[in-house]
Image (tube, rainbow, N blue to C red; front, side, top):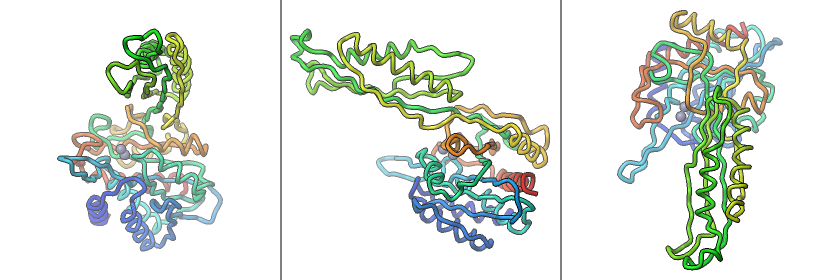
Length: 365
Ligand SMILES: [Zn+2]
Ligand SMILES: [Zn+2]
């Protein structure tokens, strides 16, 4: 298995592709799966694929999910693609498990091997769900290679505590006027400042961590001596729970509308939950944890790994109602995730493949 892992990782590492452009990646995944004896299906978007191992007996319908896209970096005007989030490793671990599980077989239910496109765009999981190819899936497990800052090498947890991630756009409408006659206009920039101050006063229960801040503020009167009539503000919101996210969005709407009104402007607001927070099934997580203990040793495993990041994985539980667990696997990812030319300890890939195999056997015999 070690040789297979290194050869397979090298191919994907040398062929990084961005979200929904993973054509060579998908072709190679499909060819390997066919070689193992599967009949994989490519998703309608044209990238990503799913293969099924069906016992033919009743039982749980389990999904094992790996994301497959890379990131882009611009250096001296040149765009370079690189697997800076370790998805080359994620693909490799799941392929190694699919290979072994085809030989082993399972006793009940079935398992989907999901090679999901476009995680980094945060739109890939929805495209997989919309394909209908995994519509009977009842439970799903994800796994990600982690930097030491989050999970020490050789350590793991069955719950990676991804945050909810939301965005609110506020378009401010004021009234144009000559800058020497400001009382005839409504200054959209000043309204925007009121909105930022009002939003900074939003409070939620501090026992559930969150942050809400302006990240874009554009106001343009076209010239220095004109009262601007338009402004755009974008707020980035992170929250530990989906409930806190909803509360912040509701409060932000009220704050922005009233702050704009205080100077006679109006605020047009659109909001979007981009990622749901992690919500995990305790029974599935316990089973995954026991597999982690078997593979890595009890001392190396904890219940949960705190994180500041978000993932589109949580659409599977929020949109499909699938029970979920998500493994944080310490791989000494250095210097950290999303750094150009980052690297990790490849020994983690063998552990990861063993964990996938263990999870499938634990649930499906
Ligand atoms: Zn990433
Ligand atoms: Zn990633």
